[in-house]
Image 1 (cartoon, rainbow, N blue to C red):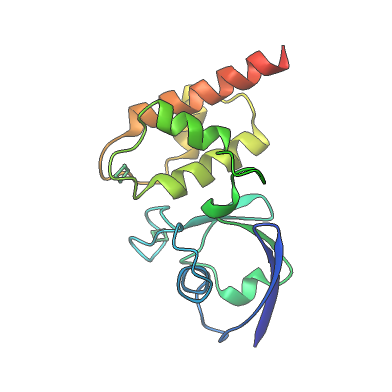
Image 2 (tube, helix red, strand yellow):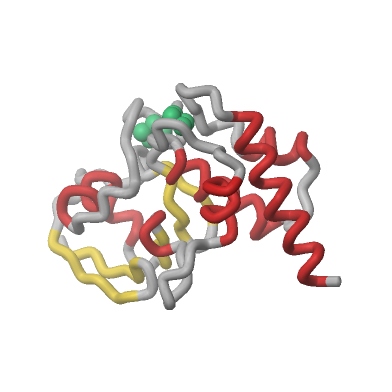
Amino acid sequence: MIVSFELNGKDVHVETSSDRRAVDLLREDLGLAGTKESCGNGDCGACSILVDDKARLSCLTLAAQLQGRKVVTIEGVCGEDGRLHPVQKAFIESGALQCGYCTPGMVIAVIDLLNSNPSPSRNEIREAISGNLCRCGAYQKILDAVEEVVKDSKKEAS
Ligand code: FES
Ligand code: FES
């Protein structure tokens, strides 16, 4: 079957099988290896992508379910000029990563959160990333990074 969808702002049409997982389509067929796979069964959040602006687990999503959707992977969150997304920038500046394996999924989860709640409390941030596991235990710095993004966006708005 051919699946057609918008991927990081561009239309793609890709031949795939009906049981192909989205994570495999993205990483192996389309070469977007920024999306990570760890558990492969919905428990870690490493494989998160945005589908129609909502975070989805690509290991539990079939490629066919992307048909007609707007899909953004970690490669697509930066600006057109290549500038890092504010969440990516804050993660770097706050030292919110160690090995970085969970980071793409964490960034996607945080973008999803800020899309719906631009001013989350620390507890709301904690809740939003509760499905994303960090084996390095960088949680406190991740929370700090998200709080920095929120603080900066409030400053810009005032
Ligand atoms: S790899 Fe998808 S949730 Fe862990
Ligand atoms: S930074 Fe290593 S798993 Fe999170």
